[in-house]
Image (cartoon, rainbow, N blue to C red; front, side):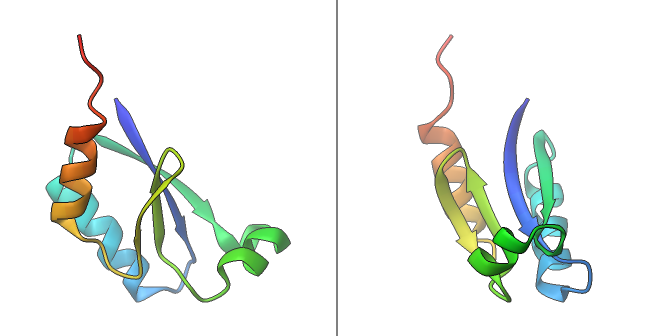
Length: 81
């Protein structure tokens, strides 16, 4: 199963919306949630600029999920059998 790293905060409505959209559109994509508030370095890096999603080292979105972009990136990086 492929995964997306999802930087988030507890009381973030955009984070809740983005996570729901990922789950709805990409049910086979595992979400690795990272709480920005749990690490001072992450607070420094992301501050209020969440949610942020990464596939590997590629930033997929910030604030709002672009479903088409994520789908395209997943297709481009699909492992070949």
